[in-house]
Structure formats: structure tokens, C-alpha cells
Amino acid sequence: MTQEKTRLQEARKGTSDWKKWGPYLSERQWGSVREDYSKDGNAWDYFTHDQARSRAYHWGEDGLAGISDDKQLLCFAIALWNGRDPILKERLFGLTNSESNHGEDVKEYYFYLDSTPTHSYMRYLYKYPQAAFPYGDLVATSKQRNRGDMEYELLDTGVFNSDRYFDVFVEYAKQTPEDLLIQISVINRGPEAATLQVLPTLWFRNTWTWWPGTPKPSLKQVSSQKGSQAVAASHADLGERYLYCEGDVPLLFTENETNTERIFGTPNSSPYVKDGINNYVVEGKHESVNSGKTGTKSSAHYQLNVGAGKTATIRLRLLKLGMRVIEMASRVRLAFAAACPEATLIRHIAVSLMPAGP
Image (cartoon, rainbow, N blue to C red; front, top):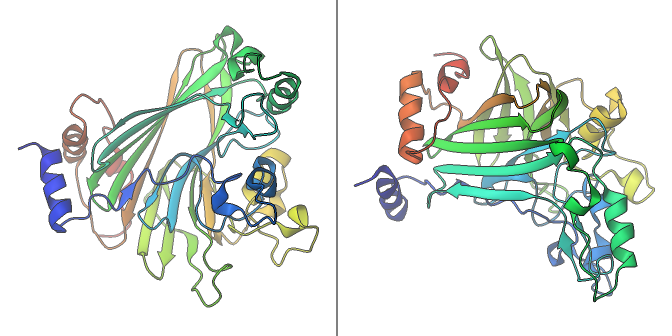
């Protein structure tokens, strides 16, 4: 019997909840009927892509290469910035029904490469241009085309010319149902060295604003072993968990709450809102993140310089507090091998990202 068959049997019997964490995060929550409270049923215009970075969702979340628990209370995904885009790349972009000559259409290149039935191993690829993402060009050119014309695709814009882009691979492997190992590999496909800011992000879906009386969860920075940073996540239903981030990387915190000033023109109840990390990274607004290192949305801020044809790697670990996991690197290699035998993956993550304390 293979390890995956064993995991499936344990999941069916309820002895181990191997499916509690998986790729349950939406690719796109904005512009969908799930968030539509318009009077005319126009979901595309009621909640737009431009609003998505600033406006808290009600019924779900979205993100790049994202995962969550099966109730989508705690979410993890990556955000990217090439230093040229007007916003962080936190979610997929696409055209709405009225913007495209053939109806709504995502304008991104991303690939789900692998996933076992229990999601004990998952692999994802996103292709991110090094030039500014052509948001405006995609909309303007597509609007000029009629039903008989070919669609205007991202490749047509020339943004991938000379292979000036990054391949961003995101891999997950479960050592136990509550111990997730994460590896992000950034490959520079271009002819010259290029910089990329990578922000692995952990956040809670906002339930406390929509349902009064719901306890508000929290994220906060806590002490960790030398050479890593840690975020503690506390939720009334989920309990407590840690996200360990390899390296002495800065941690940024804000709240997953609507920037009402930007969206509705009314004052914010807090200076820390959903787009606070975007505003810190892209606009240099240091006051938009919480210097107290607490919130309901947090990102580790990696700034990479990747040589032509080279690869940079980021490793993280999300696990349940109190598990006292004390594995050696060889144990981790076995865990990945069991999840995906053909993969050559993380070698020292359990040693470098060890929970603080015994």
C-alpha cells in the first residue's frame, strides 16, 4: 500500500484529517456572484478587480497559488512585485463581460502542475513579467475588437519579449495533516539579472465585520530560532498555528478590512486596512502597516535579485501550535518523497524552520 493510499484511508475513517488543508482558495473572488449585492445583478461592476486589493470579501478569498483550511478561515498565498507594476500581484487579472470581445476572460498564465488526492503534495506555476503588467492595454485594446476578431491575449502585448519574465513555482507538502512545508522557487528566464519582491501572505477571512459578535482572530510576530521569523495565528475555531519564514526577513502586518476611504469615500475606522501592505511596498507608505507587528493579514517581505537563468528559493512552514515537531532533514526528505516520489524538493526545511522551544 502506498503512503497516499494510507492517507486516503485515514481521511475516510476520520482518524487523520489529511484534506483539512488544500487548494480551496478561489482564483478570483472579485466580479463574481458570490460577492454581488447590486440591485441590477451586475456582479462585474459591483466588485471590480481594482477594488479587490482594498475591499474585504464577504463569502470567500482569492490569491495566487493559494491554500486554506476547509472552512476558509485561515488563508495562505503569495504576492509579487516586479518594481514596475502599479499594484502588487496578489490575484489573477481578467476582463469583465463588457471589457472583452468574447466575454469575461482571465489574462494570466498559470498552471496547476500536480496534486495528490489528499493534497499531501501540490505544485503550481505562475509566469510573471519583469516589465509592467499591461492592465490598461489589455482593457483598451480588447474593447476596440468586435465579436469576429481574435482575442487580445497577454502574449500579444509583448510583455514576455526576450523571455523577460519569472517562473514562480510554489510547492506544498504535508508532513502531517497539520504540518505544511512550503517552497517557492523563482527562476529568472530573462537575459539579465532582475529583482523581484516576493510576499508569502497569511491572513484570516473577514468574518468579524459581517457577523457582529464573532471573535476577531489575530496574527502577531513572535520569537523564533535564529535565521527565521515567525507569525503566530490565533482563531477561536481553528486554534493556534505558526508560520515560520526562512531568513531574517521583515514581517509586515495590517488588517483584512475594507479601506472605506478609498472605496466609499468615508473615513477608515483603523489606519491599517486590506491594501496596507500594497501601499507600503508599492507606494512607500510606511504608516500603512502596523509597527506593533499585529493584525489579521501578514506578509514576509523577501527582496530577491535573481541572475539570468538562476533560481532563488524561499522556504516556509505552517503548522499547528503545540505539535512539538522535532524532525531531522532526512525525515523531511522522506515526507516529500512519500507525497510525490518523483519530486526533488526541500532538503533542510525542518531544521531551519524549527518551532521555538522544546
